[in-house]
Amino acid sequence: MTTANHSFNSAVNQPLGTLYDLVTGDEDARVCKDIPAESCKDQPRNFFAYLGANLLTKVADE
Image (cartoon, rainbow, N blue to C red; front, side):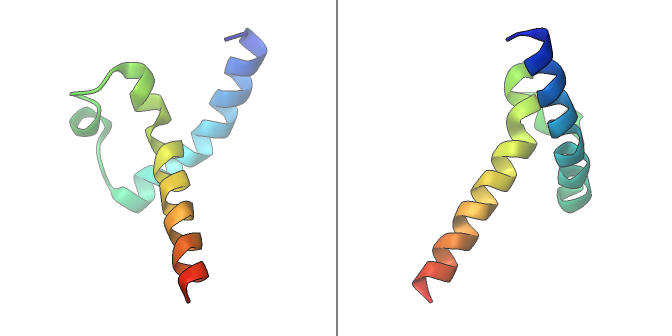
């Protein structure tokens, strides 16, 4: 990954990480203990992608 992309991803992931911590209340130490560090950084983004997909599926079912 280039430095520019890494900086952009860090800037985007920081608000998601903050919101993720607020919503879940999980500590990184407990969640990230059993997964690689790279995967741990992607967890907030994946959480909200999954949440959005389920929300849109529920809306489509109605």
